[in-house]
Structure formats: C-alpha cells, structure tokens
Length: 256
Image 1 (tube, rainbow, N blue to C red):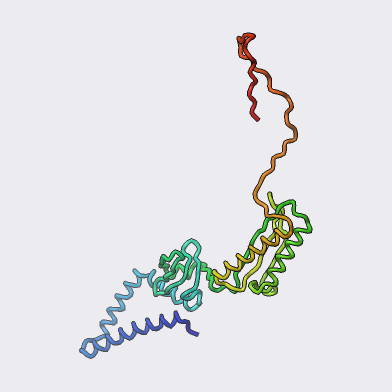
Image 2: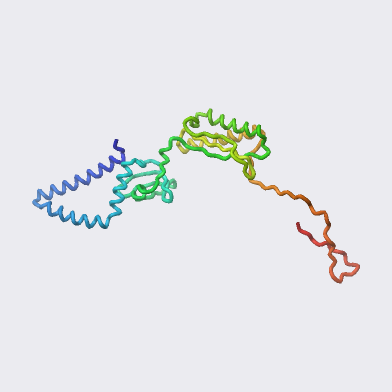
C-alpha cells in the first residue's frame, strides 16, 4: 500500500516526466531532432553524475526511507548526535525535522538511511521507571505495605497497561547509601506526552500518600559522623617567655 509521502514523490516524478516529454514533443514539432540532443544530454549526464554522487545517494536514500516506512510526516524521531523533533517533510535530497524549540533542521536523507533512527511515534506504550528511596528506619512491614499499595494502584488503574501485556515491577531493589530503594517499572496506555505527564503526576501524589500513610518518609542524601571518644585533657597553659609574675597565663587555643 502506498503511503502519503510515497504518493507525493510519485506525483513530483510524474510532473518532471511530463515536462521532459512535453519539451521533446514541442522540439520534434518544430523540426528539431531530439535524438542528438538526448545523446549529448546523456554524455553531459554522465559528467554531472560523477560530480553529484551525494545528490543521487540522498535521492536513493529517500526512496529507501519511504519504501521501508522508517518514519512519516508528523512522526517524532531522534537521530543520536544529530537532531530530535517532528518530521515536517521528506524531500528528494533532505528531510526537514522541526526541533521542539521550533527550529527547522535539514538532514540529508543518506544520514537518515545509514544511521539508527528512533521513532517515538511508533511506541505502543510509554514507560515510567522510578527509584523511590525511603528512610532506613522503615520497618519490614512498612516496606511491604508501601510495595503492595503502589503495585495495587498501578495494577487497578485504567491508565496503566496490563501486566500481562508489558513488564510491570514494584520491588524492594537495593540498600543505597542513604535510603532503601523501591523500583517502580510500568507502562502507561497512552503515548501522548501531555496525558503521560498527567498520569505521572497522579502517580507521584498517590505514592506520597502511600508513604505518609505507612508512617515513614522519603530519604534524602545525608552523612553521619561517629566519634568514638572525645579527648578529656585540658589544653596546656601557655606562658610567654620573660613574662613576670604579674602576667596572667594565656590558654593555648585548640581547634578540633
């Protein structure tokens, strides 16, 4: 089945072919021999082809992009180290990608054909991958309650994909430097960015309620310093040399 972009290319190619055939017909009517002109154009075309290899390479790459359906107009794509944005048009030589700051970027088709292209518009679901750190004073019962309630919310909410269709995990993951970490790995049904942000916000608020309801709190980076013994000796009295009896002794400063 022909895509909209491929049809546009075919229409452009037909326009060019009609113009060439029409020009040849008019020349023939005027009595001008077209054969020698075509032969000369062929030699000229060989010379041009040698100097325009990149042009033909991009042209063929554009045909491959459309044939493979790597992306279509309106798709959100990312080419690592090159561009990320929305495809606006696919031309004979280059593709116009509109970045999210609304700046257009013209990318040669050859680069898009030879480089890995991430097409986010092809996502079936959208992922949420969080690490939730709770305080070390959290008991085992509290950890289990937090894990079970988060898992229950994700499983029962219609906003999230069924665990049978996608990977879904809520697990006590590890003991970090300042927290006990709970891993949350799930997918939303929607791939729309705005809707996804709303679902993330609701999930964050619910997790806050769950952690507070369990009687514990979120951890934050911290360090503890333990001193085994504090020196009990008093600092020595410093008496300046040559000081008389009336001179009061001065205590030497000691910094810890």
